[in-house]
Image (cartoon, rainbow, N blue to C red; front, side):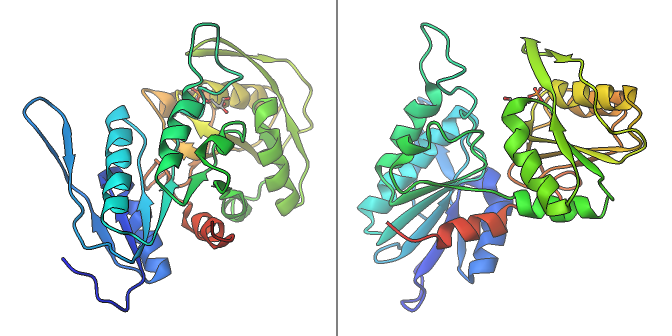
Length: 297
Ligand code: R5P
């Protein structure tokens, strides 16, 4: 398919990111194309651009999990470069390797967050990552890489819940909780978490002034649910009224949602980076648009 000459920007995506890509295309007034991947008999991926890209600004909305999505992403960037795209912006709604950062790596382990960031940053003008967990590896995507924060949109959504206190389940989550609390004009605090195993966390007891309040527990992601569930248990023990579990990336793996419910969670809110409705109620797209507008390489 050929895109009319007057169209400067197009949005491309490969399957799992279709909700974000479609909404982004709509808000930019750009056409959106899906890339389908074929597999050769030996299992290798074979991608082909669905449209002419010569001279176009292409926004590639890319998935990074499972691992095969990263192969597709790299092949697509190469195809765009070879096809003569004027500019390639790679948008990553959820960077799956973010938690394997320098701080988390033990002896004998690679800093996987940096390994894939370097590869993804090679054939693109800029990378935009929604809530990258931390900034330590962002430079590996290239000097113009930016993060997109949907915290403002999460705060607006929490307003309707009458939140009177925001809690970060661990110290790393504190800056986000503080930002939401400041937007809402309510107090905030954080807990100290010790991860005992991949599926068990322990919260260091700490007095919180939450008696009778509606509280939002805010983290960058809810994966297995143990971190947020432990925080909710502590809040309920200290007399919190209702609790909303909020995050950017709602992975909700395994029985995560059950763990939240059993702990006493009254509502779950995530953005649509990973989760879809009913939990992915908050759109990350306005944050991506803001990041894309932040100057160009
Ligand atoms: C950890 O540093 C992250 O910010 C999250 O707190 C963590 O990944 C959540 O994982 P889970 O839901 O499995 O406890």
